[in-house]
Amino acid sequence: MLSLDADEEVSPELRAEIQKLFSAPACPGSSAAFSFPRLTFYCGRWIRHGDWYPDRQTRLWRRGAAEWGGVDPHDKLLVHGSIGRLKSDLRHFSMENISHHARKTIGYSDLFARQRLADGKKTGLLELWFRPWWRFVRGYVLRRGFLDGWQGYVIARMITFETFLRYAKVREAQASKAEFSEKP
Image (cartoon, rainbow, N blue to C red; front, side, top):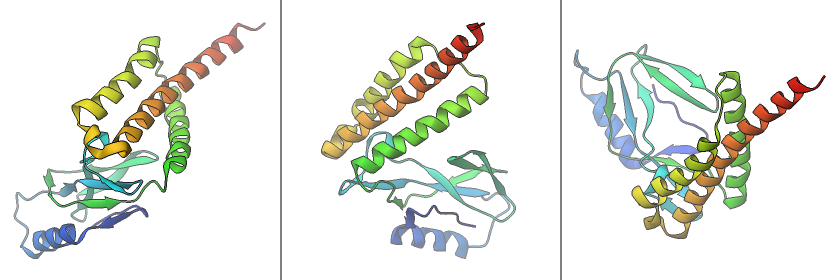
């Protein structure tokens, strides 16, 4: 079975790889599911570095070998067995432009804060200060997001902002609960 989001498409290379995989008879020790890299198109460019690539996704599985789980919007496939790795890219068209990216960032930060509070997890000042900085260094420098031109820089900055926003919203909610509980 293959599952795709509405903003994804199978590249011709991935299609050929899947067809070859399933044209061979299944071996007893073969993988229950398969992952492949997801390549995102952003502001006129395919992003091949940073935190957005290879962004491996497990979306192909043998019938009865997996089920969906996790938390929306990033549900994931829970696989009963090993996961094989395919080489070809799944194409991803998730952001129309920077404004669309900013709107999604706000929405995702709201979901993160709600989930974190529901799980009873608190956020300290260290997470609020350190995590955004670390996400920029990791994505732009260590994972070479700078090789994706100005788009790579925008992505790294937006991830930094989203990370800050996530933890700031949790802190805000924690503070408002504390203030509410302190009122007579």
